[in-house]
Length: 191
Image (tube, rainbow, N blue to C red; front, top):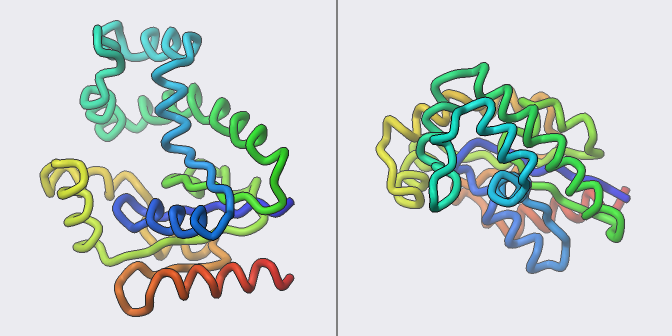
């Protein structure tokens, strides 16, 4: 089985590339969505997060995502502690997902930063100009430019990620994404 990690900064277009891969018949595991599912539904994780962050992190409607984001992006030690609670469970879910597929893609924004890239055969970096990323996230999430920049500043930049990547897809309209995805698939499957 071939495991390929898809990474890139917030707003780079990881989800768009993942949808293209899925439409081509390739399974894509989305680590961020799985993490949200675990945080929302795993009782053990909920207890650990409450112990770490206080009872206000979960309200009647569930997780207070805005409060969590504020804490994650303002305090590195909190971000690391939350990652230690959630990431092992996401990895376990990914391993279960892999059992029935010959090529599996895993979309994860901080794949390299967490060291999880070491568990993959290949790494695919999705890159885009910072201004494009900012505009996409502001539109998608309804947040301010400053909030997007805070998130970007808590992730590695593309240059740093390139050193760990086997492939790069540039989401900058210079070449259609589909053509770039097909080229990457051809390289992976011809090995």
